Image (cartoon, rainbow, N blue to C red):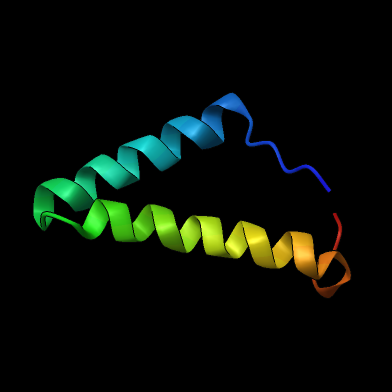
Length: 52
């Protein structure tokens, strides 16, 4: 399963990551790792989430 973020979602992810990194160095990187982990879980268990 390939998961692609649309342009707006990618911009929001980048903005959030920059904000967290500005507030606490290293937090932006942790945030991105959590997003990657979530995407991995969706790939691993695609039927666990509701499809809209």
